[in-house]
Length: 120
Image 1 (cartoon, helix red, strand yellow):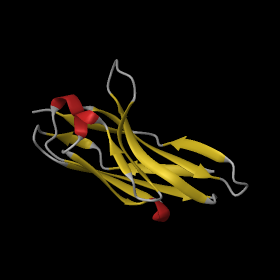
Image 2 (cartoon, rainbow, N blue to C red; image 1 turned 60 degrees about the vertical axis):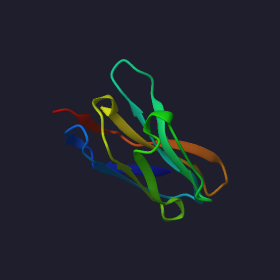
Image 3 (spheres, one colour; image 1 turned 30 degrees about the horizontal axis):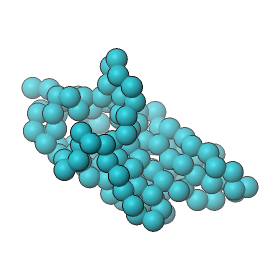
Image 4 (cartoon, helix red, strand yellow; image 1 turned 90 degrees about the vertical axis):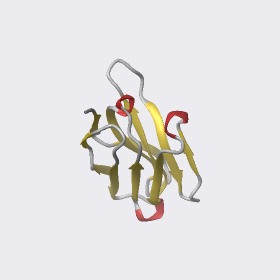
């Protein structure tokens, strides 16, 4: 089992920055990918940014050029640097990881979510 702990959400003014952190722990063989998703009120959960164990990354169209995912999947920690924040970035941000158990079964796990509010 893998547990994800997120931190770094909060209230920020438009144009400001925030950095989210996600750390994985537990008993597993390896983590294959980690990423961030978000869900705004009344909307579906969407991809923000994702990185894999071979360091490839992909981003949602609405955050390209403003958000950067970093960290090291092999070290079980990723970060999301969010710059030039807009009110429409307001959402609950969830960390997600895909991993292999010690018996090589593939599973996915979500964090509890952290609220990001962009408002003046």
